[in-house]
Amino acid sequence: MIKILAVGNSFSQDATALAEFLSDGISVRNLYVGGCSLERHCKMADEGERYEYQHGGERISTCGITLKDALLSEKWDFVTVQQASGLSGIKESYYPYLNYLISRIRQYTDAEIVFHRTWAYETGSDHPSFPSYGCDRRIMWDRIKSVTDEAAARENLRIIPVGDFIARLRETDFFSVENGGLSLCRDGFHLSLNYGRFAAACVWVKFFTGETPRYLGRRDLSEGYRAIGECLNGFDIKTP
Image (cartoon, rainbow, N blue to C red; front, side):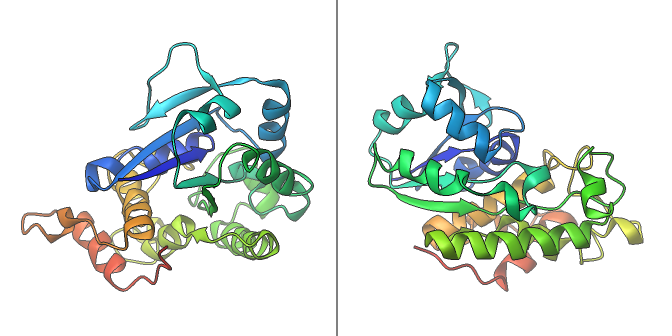
């Protein structure tokens, strides 16, 4: 069993909610604070603040848990980190926080730390951070990719390419909002509870296990799930 702890926010909640549904080879927990930035993760680590502890996208502890206690609670194979969505394409927001958070994590675990690259907002999103990217999802995605490529290389972190996969799906007819397709987001920025979360979980499963979820081999899949499966088959993911 591959054990993964996500140090994240609502975007890691979206990405991990269906992961165990798609693979019985991984166990995933998520440390959740909505909109939590790298800077705030560092502050929470220093001050011992508690996260909501999640499994399958739902809270499993009523009293919450600190980063230290979560890291010491299991023998984790991987720990994931990420930036808050609105800051994800802003280079100046990553330092000194990313390397400091990594140093705090490494105090309590020898798990491999990997970077969860999240997605751009959807066309027409009303998120207050979207104007920082000209309210253009392609500009936002280009900046996310450029900034996170540089940060991950600097810290020697491998990348879970969820944002890459969402960007690729948005170019298909089924998920192209500009051409009348279905949005992968439920509110312009969080992933939809069906296709969006499913797509992100597929990337996590393939990244950590090297396997395409067996679910995608079903013959009764709807058009949307078939589109996800077809894109995933040709999608290059560097696995552990």
